Amino acid sequence: MTLSAKVLAALQGKTLATAESCTGGLIGGAITAVSGSSKVYKGGVVSYTNEVKCAVLGVKAETLERYGAVSAEVAKQMAEGVKKLLLADVAVSVTGLAGPGGDDYGNPVGTVYIGYSDDSITDCKKLLLTGDREEVRRQAVEHALQMILEMRLESF
Image (tube, rainbow, N blue to C red):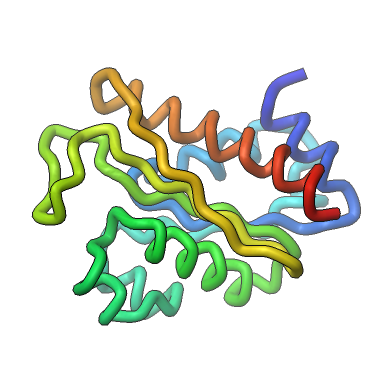
């Protein structure tokens, strides 16, 4: 059973939404590759720019200015925003730097934050991933799916 299939099985009776930046929709793609995913997965938002993070997901401009797009604060607001927008029970978000360069806030390539939100908790995990751009993105997807499983066990 794939990791995506395990996530869908663990969320039976619940709904899932995603908000993705550096992964560009790869989490949604991994989920929807599994037959029957529409029973759980409501959809996602690829918020590659700060403008979309604010206008669509409700990330506060002040948060982006203070902490930068690659931060725990933004990841949490992205998860909360997509959960509310798509009326989902569970949401996961990813924001990070896949390369080729770092950002103005001192984050190196490979810095990724995964946000999670459900009805009882909003949390975030920071990762320092290695590899080229595609490897960082692939690892981010895997960690996001794994975080859903871990939080599912703790929250429900």
